[in-house]
Image (cartoon, rainbow, N blue to C red; front, side):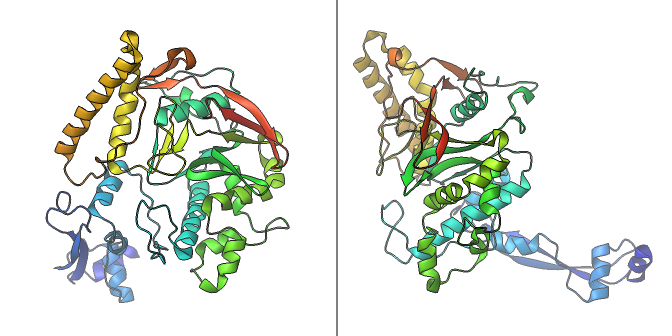
Length: 423
């Protein structure tokens, strides 16, 4: 029947629409939109008229390819973000909400607040991300949330996760750069116990992880997203899709919906009984990272970047390049310290200054932050630091960090681990 219908409209024309990109979108003004305008063209009908065109004729609808509509939303993003998404396939576009305008005079990089509308929006995006990740990635045991100005030393973190999942009995070496079969390094869903992992702090009677970067098991996301029961006062999933309403300010503040990291910590605390019912071995592990491994730079809970750094927060674009260079070179600085640690540190600082000058020149003004490089320590004390294995693919050392057991009755932590060093 479809073929007959298509043939019946043969010879008729139809409109095709597509989003035109502006000339030079990928190289010029990358902080602006890549789009120019929607271009229409008329296509004469023929014997091979498409089913889409047939439906358009029957239903009297304009023929608009599916990609045109979302492209109109994507045009609000910058060309740089477009290139990132197309190259790495690592961008999730949430078109049901936008970042709200600040109600304060805060500027990027300042320690003050953005105002309640923006802060509530951050919590909404967190809940929407947890819901999306839980349903979209059913074979992935852990979900991570991180700020866009956080740098993570990924090989180290993955090694730590594998080590803890293995009961801290043995730390498998990083996978080889060109491993034919990486399945031995994949996380086993059946063995993955529930974990809540990050830079842990205390609020009231709950542990929470700072929003810079944290990880939680998918079952913890599940109990947080479940419809409210006796232990929860508000429907978090419903609040995540509601338009901001200033009349609900008291509700937002009472639920800590204006502080995304504290909000999640309280939600996990309030659903611990349910979580332990469904988690493997009926327990939830709280994995606490200290200031030596998860820390701020430039301001806040500052700490020098050292061999032990895993997550560094408040990065400028230039910091990201500099930190990657640091992690690839710091072990060489230590190896060169046989003639004295101070001399080796000075030599490493001088080499880093040359590297910064060269990359500042070649990368141009699009990459900002070269004037404020973070404080780093190149040379480590070999006797006071653990051994390491090289992650060949990234060219960085992965240290054999130890974890110790801890518990905290007041905040209902029955099973916890903390990393060394803490400070």
